[in-house]
Length: 229
Image 1 (spheres, rainbow, N blue to C red):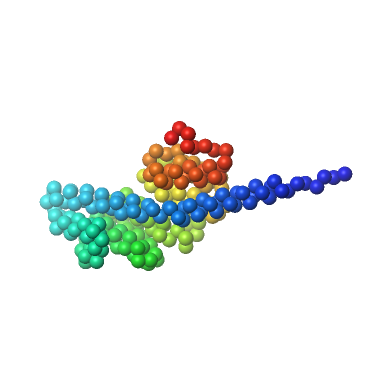
Image 2: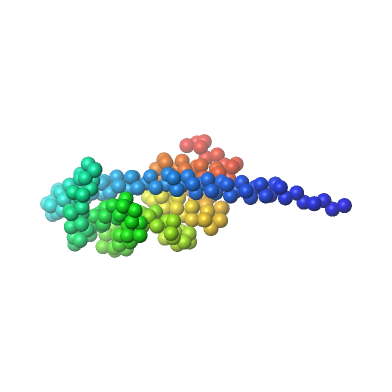
């Protein structure tokens, strides 16, 4: 007599996989955007470097001072005082200062809940070939973070895949979004591989690496990446 196949195990495994994927998405939505603070700090470093170079070479002291004063105003919680100098620098013909000012404008739009306008502003910087690639890459990452929920998953992958490599300074943030997009497309193997690449890297912020460790272990319960780190 034929034996009816027992589908309970397969069904439970499928439910378990869906639950793990939902948990990973939830963790990223709750904590992934913390990188905004890191980005702002990074912009401050960029500004300091630009300011020091300008001052030491005697070429753009006034712009360096204006940008530093804008950062000081933001740091003290007086964003309104920073608006005029930032708007002025955003229209300047000096590419570096213009880009940094536009990034600050975009961050302000994000804080105001104007995601579409912010993404467009980040896009202006990302597409500006007159500035250095590191700042353009930063703008690309921030643009994608800002509009992640409205972008098609494949669009996220196509845009960020060049930045989600082991030798990229943006592996953590870009790779995390690529992995999340893969999960949306039900490409668990690709997502797991990307999370594992991030988890095993010592070049990404520890908060992102720890999320990647948790995601890798959730997608593949037999994996233990905590050891050896």
